[in-house]
Length: 322
Image (cartoon, rainbow, N blue to C red; front, side, top):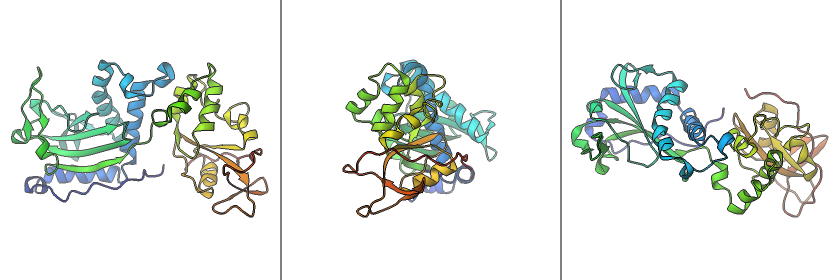
């Protein structure tokens, strides 16, 4: 899987207490060793949000449509899914042991609203935030000290990090990194309405790939639009969107190495694992400039608005992503 376009957080204004905290440094180093690009972390967050939305069954794509109890459950799912992905050891007191150190995990969809229990005072917290509307996420390490907290004002006496300490008391791993896009949430409303206009899953998928081009479309988006158990079959050839849209000049590339190579040659982002990218193509002509790829004995380019519609070439045989 290719790394998401993001850079590690810069911790240039940390307080001396954090800079000299050996346990914070050890856990920070271990997490960056496990996930130097942040890609694995971002995918866990994307998949967890999609797990809550459960689009295949509910058709939902918007966090606001979740029930209150589902939103409350988000933190538990993030905790579980991160442990499953990174195989953290169970903690004796906190959620995990990372590099032999007890670490609690706290997630919030609203930045700064991590709810920290009194028993976490003195321990490390892995603070996680993700916002589907901003397509951003952050994660950092915080030593829970009473003087750096707001007093608990709820029935569980849970605490929050005081705003003035979020800058210099949290050692960020990733700050405002790119969350894989929730395509349905960020589509133009008229395009989204057109996608969901049909009562048939196959027609909805065809419309999705027509209207969302040159952008990665994740498997969960396909599942939500199709709302059928055989949703992946609905994308492929032999009656799926790939064959249905070929007469319109549209290629749908998946996460196979051969398909990814075509996307790169056309100047597009290569699909990551579980992603698709659609694009209308045209035979390369003298007036075309820019990237091209060779398929079916001809050179092809990304079609412009004025290029006539012609049947797209066949994609190369499937070779799975390495």
